[in-house]
Length: 293
Image 1: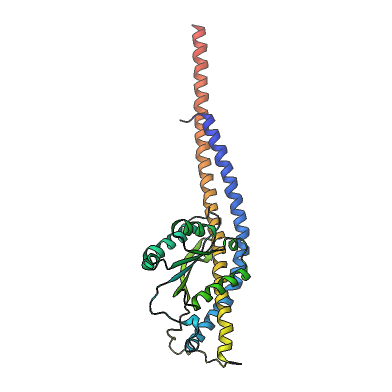
Image 2: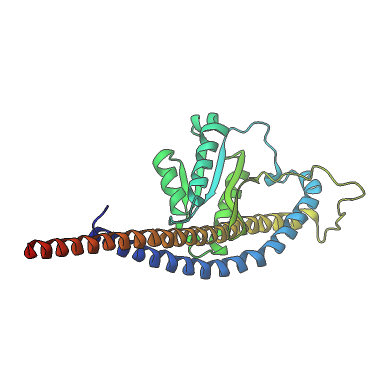
């Protein structure tokens, strides 16, 4: 059994750790509330714009819009990956890194071997992993996870759309966590470009027949980039809310584990203390008997 000093040291260490994890949990809960409000306010607007884009897609695709161009062969791919800057958020970052590895080494293995797989990252964890193992990191925006900015995302989206329209990439995909609630975040890999046309319409449902004013090309050329910017910004807000939810859950579990460990250590300390007291009493009694004899 460990001596009393060792147990006291462990108790003090675990108690200090519990205070830290409890404080981090409260900080994450506060940040989560703001991030959750932001994504909840953005989501209906983004979904409505996406629905509008789907309804327009059939007509827009007929105009040979560059962002709707479906390439027969995918020879070059751009991955937009969103992670966090810091750890201590459970499996949040490890899931993103596993997906990067899977896309690079399995899904787009031939593209990567031809050096045609490039990356845009948001968050230091993804940036560091890509730079260390794969390279081809054309843009890293690590500050956006701390302070999401639509202007910065707009510039990033313009760059991505421009490179796709010029034919530098045949496909662009986004990897991020979709926020469900504080305890549930789902890793999503979705196609950003090219925009897929509406494949099918439900029975007894008909696509909206829009009347364009002043003309279809002018409206679509202005509307489509805005929708894509909103889509990328929504992915960032989803990821930020997911990060804080994952960290709050992880710190909550760590605090509970520390509390249970403290109970065990205090029980161990009390047993060791009782054993030490019993030993001292026996030594005193034995010494007294020896003096009497």
